[in-house]
Image 1 (tube, helix red, strand yellow):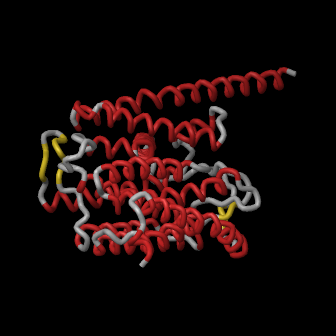
Image 2 (cartoon, rainbow, N blue to C red; image 1 turned 180 degrees about the horizontal axis):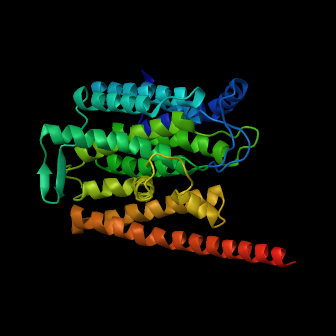
Image 3 (cartoon, rainbow, N blue to C red; image 1 turned 90 degrees about the vertical axis):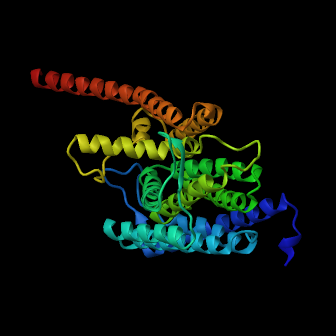
Length: 372
């Protein structure tokens, strides 16, 4: 087969190009089908868009991804690859059903646990070493299974929850995958780099339709955000499995901290929102408009500007973790979360002041109308 004769650089550029082109040409078709079948996100009190926008853009993204991976990614453990594709396809099907007719959170969670168990018990993709976090290194099978399932289910839903504005989930997901892909490439794990960059290419093809599309505007939907979160969670686990002890100059000494930095914005935002809701004695999964991206929208930024700011901040956290690895995992994680609290307290405080001024003006105008 011809791809066995490709050079090392072509092993990435050719499948990346194929993934991009398939997604780019498949998005308009997905838009037409979604509109014809009424698979749209309608405007309501908690959405950030106007009108009815087709969903299931994730179907186009992962069509490009699956086809390119199946054709070009061959120098890899086939049991692992097939299990990753099978598990992600289960998640994709649950997302499609949710976009089309709805699905209970219990069923979605069950499917996520099932896909996670496939990774652990069929492909042996699991976290088994905390690499010095609080002095802990190797962990037993029970803790390994629990931590791996928490990582997979948690990150899958983090990317689903943050997919509230145009370009955010795809932008943050692309950044995460590029970071891991570069590390995989320079440590000799070319097949994992291929998988990462192939999905990045599909996301790049999708973003213009999502951010700037008019007649062809489309959302990723649960089809895309859940599947994206699942694959990133699996790649994060592989990141922690294969990078320690590589012997290369890119070997990292605080991988758990870098792993969290790679997905810091989705993770931090989810934890922040859950804590606020619990403190208000509300269901942590109840819908509202208190996510970080809602804060920036409230300050007057557009969807594109907000996504760019948050992706830029996530890049900053990645660089902080990468260049501060010598501090160790525990101290570095403390610095990351402390930095997150300080940085995001500023826009939150500005939004509160803006809302207070707006309320004061409303009360003043109301009093003037009463007097007149």
